Amino acid sequence: MLCLLLAMALWGSSFIALKLAFAELPALWVIFGRMALGSLIFLLAWRWRGALEYRAGDWKYLLAMGVCEPCLYFLCEAIALQHTSAAQAGMVTALMPLLVTLGAWLVLGERTTQRSLLGFAIAIGGALWLSLAGNSDEHASNPLLGNFFELLAVLCAVAYTLLLKHLSTRYSAFFLTALMAFIGCGFFLPAALIYAPVPAQLSLKGALAVAYLGVLVTVGAYGLYNYGVGRLPASQASAFLNLIPLFTLVFAVLVLGERLNAEQLLAALLVFAGVMLSQWRSKGLLPAGTLD
Image (cartoon, rainbow, N blue to C red):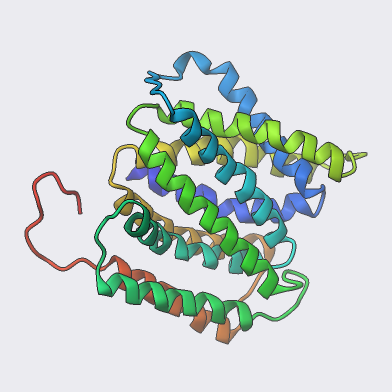
């Protein structure tokens, strides 16, 4: 639980670091830089990779996990943060626990309740209201478009979480996090060379933002999250994701000076209300071995 809490704080701060980095460097080079730094750290620490129990056919799940996140996830998030504010993007991530629950119901056949489905609908409505109520300013040039791409990024993260839970019984958190960094590095380098100009210079602020993303977020946050998911039920671990919008909003206000208007604050409360409703558990006896 402590690992997940620290991971959420780091992820919440990553939206601010990305906004700062994107102001200095092309998005594709920012993402490649963080993946390259993460890959280097994992290579230096490879001796501590843990046990690997490869099972025939796992390559499909491992590859799909890497394609969902970081490849598609970071592409969508990069586009999102160029059009919406860090605070609004963080609020959209509040939908992830609900989408994990919905995905487990549809894909894995896990049972869900009408209360969870109602909470899901309320939170979706709140996220849409949050996007439509956004005003164009220096922090968010097109909130509706940006929040739409952030939602696509969240969907990729949901698929990543479900695949991660499936694979975590056979592979260590270190290996799965390292694989994610290696795949991202191999994907974003050619993309950056083809579609983005090579940065002619790098400011200290840009370099520090990329280093923070590569070391503390790519290695630290993902490593902590993968460790936590491997040791708790997916639904329980995903509930910690509700903290990301809170951390993001606090950091966005303190570091970037962002603000939500009154209508957006009401919409954000609606998102949280839907999330809390979906996560509500009635008191009662639990089956043996069930964590709640």
